[in-house]
Length: 172
Image (cartoon, rainbow, N blue to C red; front, side, top):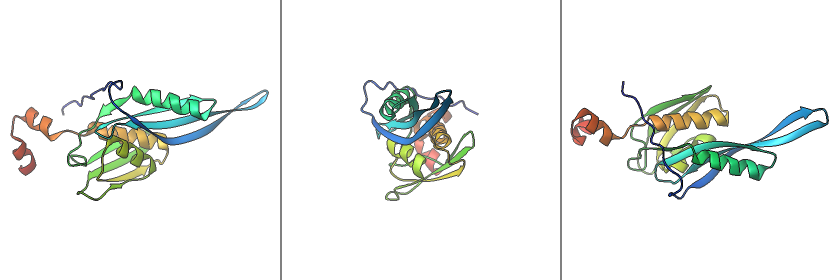
């Protein structure tokens, strides 16, 4: 089995748009009472195959979101997109989260649930069928979706690795 290499991307030279997936209020009980803080899960992407996720924690919502954006810019991956969809079916797992993504024909749209939809749209995938099984926790679903997208393989690199033509990959 070939090892999958993640292409890390520098965020300084690309235009990224941010999507807040989830905001959660967390309480810490101290001697003086409850202290509230916030966590934010953020997905960033350029809409052309680059996507990343991040988690920010702070005492204010806006600070948590900005910390999440900075964390997401450190975790960018490159996703192969062919005809506005994924090249092949893929399963992604993280913790209790299990996601299944499948290519769809042009005009289908993004058929996916909340947290998965944010990741797929940020990556620039316009036609895909996706199903989230297992945990519905946004943390696990986002990380499982990123896992599935990082496992996707580009047909051009597969043809190059096997030493065959691109037509043989699709017709073979």
